[in-house]
Image (cartoon, rainbow, N blue to C red; front, side):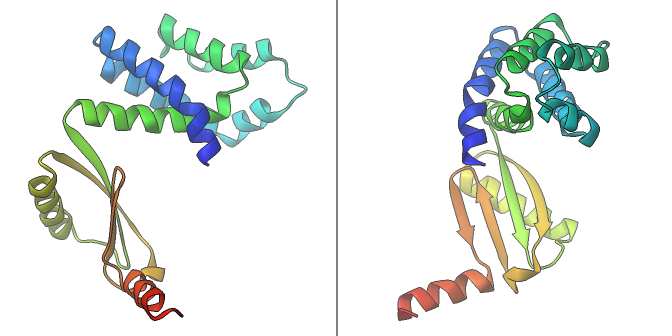
Length: 178
């Protein structure tokens, strides 16, 4: 996964810089999301991964799929990604672009993992507390992981807050040298 991030980052940064320059952040966000979904489709992913399929054929397939949704710049991005065999990095490019866009908009994406499904009221309270602590708008996405036993794990950019029972047990074991 870290390899994909390394590959995707320069593309995401270039697209983001162009989107800011042309005041087209929302348009690019939609384009990248669309392309991410397309290349993640199992049938398309099989064609992309097949070394017997020529670059031009891959490109034409994707251009045909996105005919109504891709600007000239979106088509150029596809050309570059096809020529450099970077199509599998498109979902990661979209994710990195979204993070840059959120930061540019003064918001931060926060992932909340809990042992149980969070109620909307709990999510709203958590969002308000994080907004106060971080001084920015907060976009929360939550998921469930029963392995945490109880509590929550919060990821906001590089910051991780592990308030889970499993995390506390691991920390205790480390302190005891177990």
